[in-house]
Image 1 (cartoon, rainbow, N blue to C red):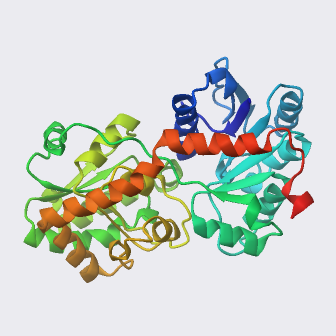
Image 2: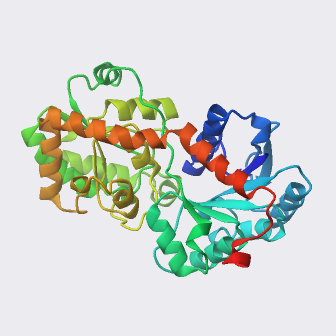
Image 3: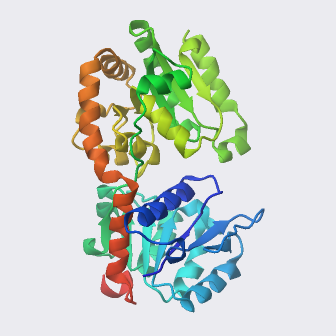
Amino acid sequence: MKLLFVSTFPPTKCGIATYTSHLREGMMRSLPLSPAELPVLSVFPDAWTPSGPEIWPLPKHDPDAYLRAADAVNASDVDVVSLQHEFGIFGGEAGRMVLHFLERLKKPVITTLHTVFDRPTPPYSDVLGDIVRLSTRLVVMNRLGIEWITRQYPVSPRAVRYLPHGAPAPLEAPAEALKAKWGVAGRKVVLTFGLLSPGKGIDRFLPAFARVVADVPDAVYIIAGQTHPEVKKAEGEAYRESLVALAERLGIAEHVLFIDRFLDEPELVELLSLADVYVTPYPGLGQITSGTLAYAVGLGRPTLSTPYAYARDLLRDFPDLLVPYGDEAAWAERLGRLLRDDAAREALAARLKAVGAGMRWPRVGARFYALASEIAGRKERIASHG
């Protein structure tokens, strides 16, 4: 079976590109498959063109290119198309140019929904409705997404599958050796990583962390990742600078470490592996997926999070790890308790590692490929069977 991915793809630096690359690699490691059996139709901005024998280019802002791509796929030996969907990676309002491709496509398509809203949100919900209609199967990485999709659109729950977000395998290197490498030897490390923006909630977390530092003076908070490109375009580094100023006002500047650059996969795994506690204090409670939280749990790291949608689902068996957004006292109490109690933290890590075992990329890749195999050769779309 030949499975074509439609997505952004490295060297593009975005979460969807990274996800697609790892899912594809997971399939090649677990089954095994060759790159030629897993080609990629790579969406790219006008500034550059992807290249490679298995990488087919799709210019983001050219509406005719989506039609040409569909014709090429229809004429090819591709059996199933995997559409990795996020509104911002395709051209047009709310990414609607991808509909040109789907309407012309004659192959079965599995659409992985990286964003799902819990209520209609025009114009995104209108575009998503058409994507749902034109897909053969849907994949969500949050079990809540099945309810949200079937409540808003005429689709059977049988057509929507849950597959966990993938995660890397844990490192064998001792945490203390990694801490020494990153310049935080002997310290209790709290970590947040990802593209920096006000949506991370770090400004509300820092006052709680300041309370923790008073009781755990060897604590350090690492904020890893560059500023989100759209935020940087709009306001430069104003948010990062505001966080630096806040840490200084709180008297914890020496306990907050910024790593202001794009981190590659091995670096992220090292940082997560050395972290004593990973935190996602996000304010947006409707967020349906989080690759950062998936990685942390997948690697078995003790975690604290606000109860946004993805965290509620992934941590459903760990309610004590969900902390209300902006509740400074609750964040300080739970984080301080975890940092002080090494035995409790290690026990929690062991439980989370057991959850993470089912999230390794090869296992998720094999499950996705099995789903694709089920629908290979079928022509029906969700619209035809409800």
